[in-house]
Length: 484
Image 1 (cartoon, helix red, strand yellow):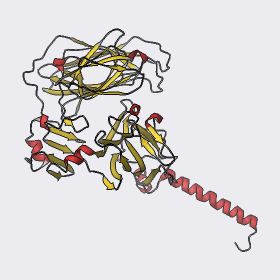
Image 2 (cartoon, rainbow, N blue to C red):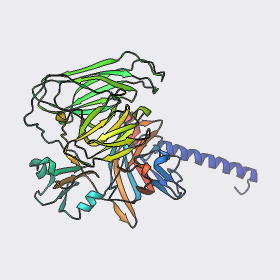
Image 3 (cartoon, helix red, strand yellow):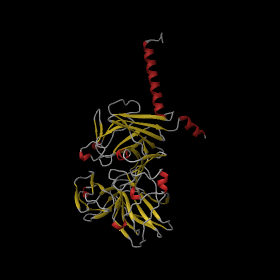
Image 4 (tube, rainbow, N blue to C red):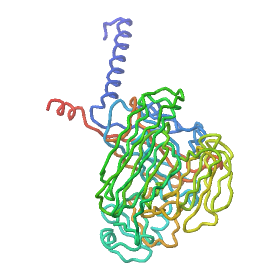
């Protein structure tokens, strides 16, 4: 370049810069190695793979974000990650500190796998309950699982599963196992039971023994929330081994605008014979624009899982029963504002869309909830039923902030405690991305601190940094697959 004029040198430099920029953009788009790391630091240092790829934490009223701090004050919070291509797995490393581990002992993170059910597959970041018990109870590691015993009885997880204790003495965390479940003295019934209207998706357990599984529901499309994919319905029936035994479909009614026009409701009727005795789970999968009406069944034991969106008519009260120790309530419409009774003790839903969390002060073995407002979402840890005698829960108890440890003697957890970094902690979460929901290059992530309400003005945790290491097929592997 000795004999080049200054114009030629500038031109060469500009072209070199453009070529280099193009190569960087191609590299970011293709990620030829199959590995890419995206990082977030609230205080900066977010060049390639940082801000611009990782979206803002939302909703705004659940986070306090300054130039140096990112504090979570409500549960849950979300962020998106833009990637120019798909990856198969992710390793999230999060550096954080909690402010009240006794009140908010659990922090979890995960990725959305189902946009209709708003289902996020969550994994542990921190569980202070297990961290504390691991210092007090005998513990052992068994093939990646942690076994805690108040009094040492079992030598391994497999020994416990083969010869389980009484189920009310056992709790799981981030782990699932189905034990044979039998309702002693169960009698099938033939009388039809009518259930209140429900909105959106829901799931329930039913117990079957020498009877068909029957469930009939009319779906009314409210046409209030426009969706380019319409408002279809899918219903799945699973046996106790989580195997699908039946599937039902209902297409959209043809109206995809939010014009409020109501077509006649349409029915799905389930009637399954010759089923092996045991527990079955029914999953009704649709969006919030669908209303389930005229719900009928003859099952004597029917228990809805964790969440109900009640859509009862004005001036019509609804009673539900649960063995859960708390309820979380939100009015999705002004009609839901009003009084809710927990074991005959009145509480008040004062604002629409505000989250309320109330424990049962006078907790009983079965707790009663009564409400008269319409369009109210009610949640608990466990199951709900519309009749006290039909309530049951085949699931093993979970280690959460509401768990009564007085009867628990054994805990199985798929959990690795975070690493201490002084006032900070560092946790690593492994995620499967093969089946995640992804739209326009974005995947959606969640950080959850159960029980944390923004209305209380408390800080649950502060995030110092977050790193996502993604792994997928390399460019060479993709080319080999294409050639084949």
